[in-house]
Image (cartoon, rainbow, N blue to C red; front, side, top):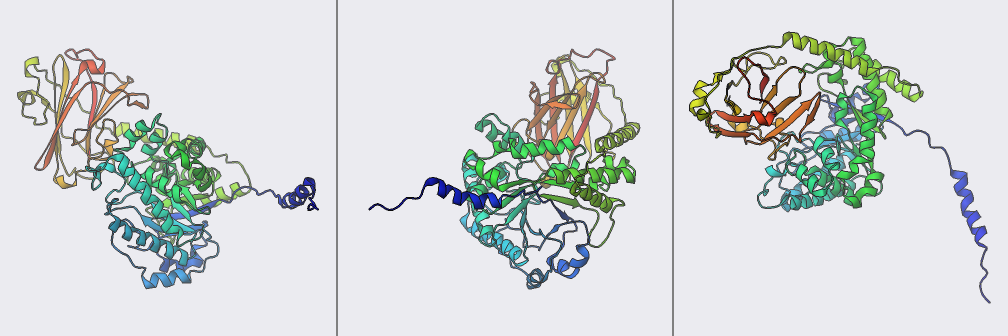
Length: 566
């Protein structure tokens, strides 16, 4: 006799009822505000002061144990006994999401298994310490405050292995990195200040082909970082989360900026991720936003819009940014500061804490944000630009013309006869934000003939061993290191041309219309550089035809600025 078979409908009903009964509205996601800055505390400080610290309007903080966080230095670290005891003793209450820092400054070799044995021990030690302190996870700051592990051309063995081979090795190390954390922590959150939101990775994410993306990344400051991210995703456990921070939000002043980058992190950024990891990216990566006290409250040494606002305008701008940062994050926002200290109540700007509290209250009550921070920012920018224009040092120079037979050879030596006839410009001065005399002088000579404009620059440099050269291909981000800029315009309001050259004679050029830079403008011009004892030279020959200009006539005017980035 065959066994009795229950009707299929009965089985379906038995399974469906519990599921239907458990279906509930989850509500909006919880938003977590973290504190981090130059006031980052040790666990020993937190253990002693946690009750006072939790009076601040945060949900958690980032802690540091030095030198424990320097994970990419192949030196074995130890957890100081006093900090281990403090981690065990911290009595968390309101601060539910806390993290322990690790940093990316590197002295290791990606291809050295011996180095990486130590690196992984260091990673595991930080994660173990975080687990002891009942932290939510670790925070990995990928910005290298020291030797850069992400820049392919500067790596050991870059002359032996191709960029593709480096990417494969770094991807392997990323998987080992996340495995080491997960071995010490259950369902950790790996908080970062950026995964996909830095410039070159954004450009690569939007490249049309893999080859084009590799061309962008090969010489980019963070060119290997994308491979590391993919390695983490390769090995990630089901309960682990990666927090994709958006550090550029430090400078936002319009809610549209937050929504645009959220869309990028959720959709466009997939272009920077290996296709096989797209499902994991969607499942494991959280979009995060950031806040920068010093920018908005005018605390930075560099002059910014925040310096040209009233205390009330600063408070409003910050309230606006707190609101939209939290609104457009999946869970986490961090608040960053440098020239103040929340935990010792030192130099806290008036209105800062009130702005944070007000924004959080409005968001939790589902109230609209009515502050127009963009209008506040634009008025401040107009005031800043008006003052800068009033204080701008304007100079005139009569440029001598040379006969065509005297055109200089562009080789960097600056020893042609033409330069003895050229006009020497007045000495280059420091920016308005600089104080005192410039440390290294810059000497500029200019001349021209019917064919071209010629510029010779000598950059005196007392610290030649500290020259920083960024990029090796045309239109790389060479301005991030030592370089010389040349701006040229025929008449005010016209499009202007912008050339940059670094000491390795890597060039960047663009044509600007309004505020947009068209870097596809790769015109035909010559440059050469030469380094010597205490200086580096630059020579440029820029044909008038390359600018789309006729040869200047006697008495005509060209608007120009020549700058040095040191």
